[in-house]
Image (cartoon, rainbow, N blue to C red):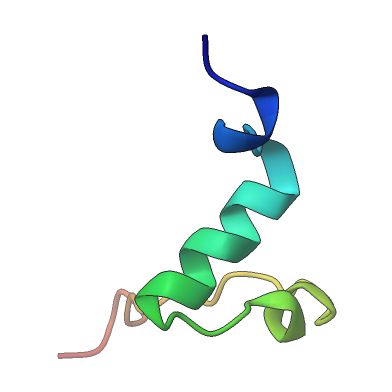
Length: 50
């Protein structure tokens, strides 16, 4: 019978996401969440322009 110390512990949620980002070398995206949302800008030209 195996000891419980030999078994890896299961990691869920935010801790699992952090470990995955560290392993893959992906930067944390918290800096983007602090920014205020801005309204969408339309790219359509005025109807009378070419």
